[in-house]
Length: 312
Image (cartoon, rainbow, N blue to C red):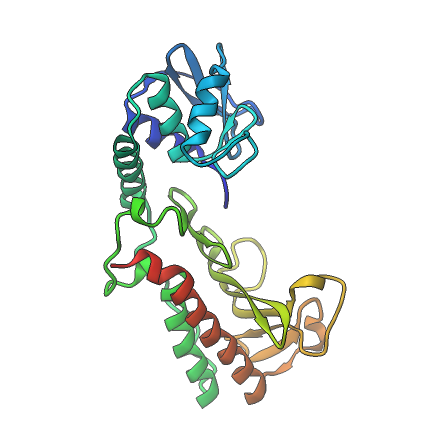
């Protein structure tokens, strides 16, 4: 996920100490959203993933100064500002402090760190989900289940009680975290060539990852999703591991001999290509070995590109 959520915006402005105004209607979606005032400018959330200005406009010279602190030269350069919009926690804290002539790098880092720490403390991402099915107990399935248990701690490292994490401000320029602990809990960790996702809601949960790399001089990607559906959305109750291994340059309609796009149910032991569940068959040891290989390979890359950046 990119951008700033309604809750992120609220926590950032409360941490900064901005003046709270009555809620308004979102600029993009007609929902009630928070509104804060800084130097006569009303900042409201769009209702989607960014903040907009109302009542008055931030002077161009101040916007330019805020962008310059991130090394940006125009509003579409980077992840913080976009033509009058603000897209990040650090972006809104930086802009507000410059407007009020309070800006120092140390102040912005301190307030940004406190906002992320508060969001993390409020979130419900620190416990691993139980693996629900144990009906298929072949040696290969048991091996797969053990690797999946390890994989959950890579897709959501915050559920690993053995890890000690850096302060968020120490890794925000390397790994971008997005998380929520409300009705639907999620954690996204994004780096340049990898990302992980943990999602839990009323319908179940999932651990996901994507890594980019080169193999045999070709740009490849592997997407993994380990998900559990509890049946409340009228889909069958199931736990599935999904692997999508493909050529990055031609992902989609083109198929290459080494591409993979298939799923294995840990409830039934069946395997099938995506969109061809009618041709499902008992998963072979070779297919399970392929899944285990990609899980372990992805975990090594996630450790190097994400986890090593956020742990002490």
